[in-house]
Image (cartoon, rainbow over all chains, first blue to last red; front, side, top):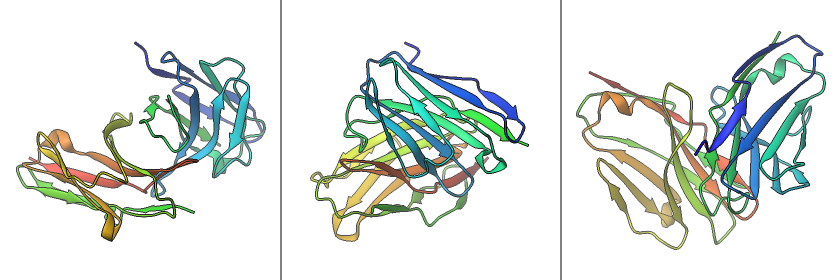
Length: 115
Length: 112
C-alpha cells in the first residue's frame, strides 16, 4: 500500500504565485489533515476534513484554502504565496477524529520555498 | 486550549547511553490520547505509540519505554542503549475530540 502520498515533494514559488498541493490516501480514511512544520514550532494544523465534501479550519488557516471533492484526495491551495508560507507541509489521514483516537498516517512532506 | 511542551530542544548522547525525552501536556478534556512520533533525517513522520488518558500503565517495546503520569501531566519517552539510528526529531502530541496538537520536538543526536 502506498499510504499517504503528497505531490510535489519540492517547489519554489515567487511571491504572489499560486499553487496546489495534492494529497492522496489509499486507506479509506475519513479524516484528512494539512499541517505545516516550521523550525522550533512543531506541526501546526492548517485545515482538516472529516469526510468527503467537508472541510474545517485548523490553527493557522489564513492564506490557504482546501477542498475534499473525493474521499481519497485532499487539496491545499495557496492563492497568493508569501515568504511567510515557506515551510514543510505534511498531509495526514486517520480513520477517526481530528483528535486522533487512532494514529494519523503522514505523507512524506512537501518542502515549499517562497522567494 | 490544549498545549504540549517539549522543553528539551536538543539532546546529544553517546551511543549505548540511555536517554529520556520529556513531554508535558495541558488539556481540559478528561478523555484524550497521547502520541509519540519520530522524524528521522529523511523527513517522514513515523508513529511510535498511542496511549489513552485512562491507561497509565507504562509500556515497553524493545529499547523504547514510555512513562505516563497523569498526576504530573507527563508522557516521557526513554530509549535504552541508544543507537546512532535513533538520531531524529521526536514529537509528542496530544489528541482530543477536536484536534491533534504537537509539541515543538526534541532533536536527538546519538554519537558513535
